Amino acid sequence: VFLIAIITFYASSAMYFKSRSKLEYESKYWEYYFFGGALLTTLLLALELKGGLISAAWAVEAIAILIAGFRYELSFVRKTGIGLLLLTIVKVFIIDLAGLDQFYRILSFMVLGAILMGASFLYSKYKDKL
Image 1 (cartoon, rainbow, N blue to C red):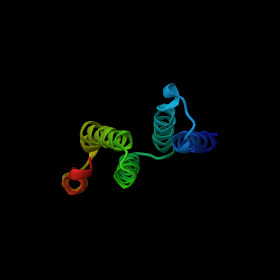
Image 2 (image 1 turned 90 degrees about the vertical axis):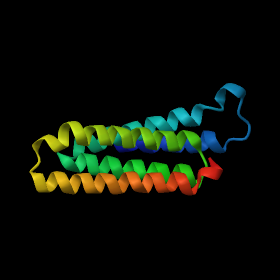
Image 3 (image 1 turned 120 degrees about the vertical axis):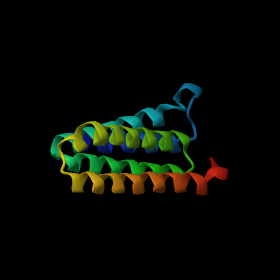
């Protein structure tokens, strides 16, 4: 059921984005549908996965959304990706790191640092297009 809804939201977003004959008030519809699809994807990952896999899946989703935002030069998509990445970081710091051994905490901080450095690199590389 979630998968059908996710596909519907993303397809509606693409259709409204590509539509040339839209009215003034319809120009932002694609953003609402895109955000709905991203939200449902995030919820589906949270329901289907367990533990640290949720954070990893959310990080992959956020990076994919960020890359799409940079590729198609869409500010709203980039902001959605950054918001999801921030949600992932908060979840990692508050929930995931509390129950980990020291080795895995260090490993988690290293992966988190690499993800943040990658996002920073993308923003600095494409700052003239933003």
